[in-house]
Length: 223
Image (cartoon, rainbow, N blue to C red):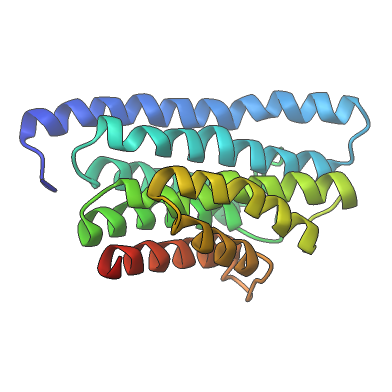
């Protein structure tokens, strides 16, 4: 059932507020991790990039895992994603960046929020099961975090290197297998490869999510 009754929607809205508060709490908690890293002589860009990945995992990934447990439709999760997208876009618009995790060069964290919401909505409405949404979101949140941590550790800057894609696959493949079985592994491989590329504003968050969604749609249709 995609449309919950009013009582269920009200309950889910309350849960959504709690989860949104948690997400914002993680964002502001990374101010502390930024200060700690800077106190340890981490360059600004390295601390920022680590923080982005910490937020991916602890906010985007952790909340996604709770979606099938607490929600009966994509309405509240989609609204949550939209609120987070707007909240991360406004600092770019006003020029008042949250500099402990945002950069003036791109708005990829906004793309992450948008694609999180798109994944939940598309998977639920078109495929009929929120579990399918966990696959592209897991690739974005956990797999991309693995590649980000690896590259940051090795190169101390945001860059593209195939060693990071290998790390992404090492994380994404078992997660996808756990969620949808053996067919999740080739989807994880495709997503891990496509992460290596970006086309202007179309960053790896968009590409990885699209590959994940197309992959689960094909499985749903033909397997």
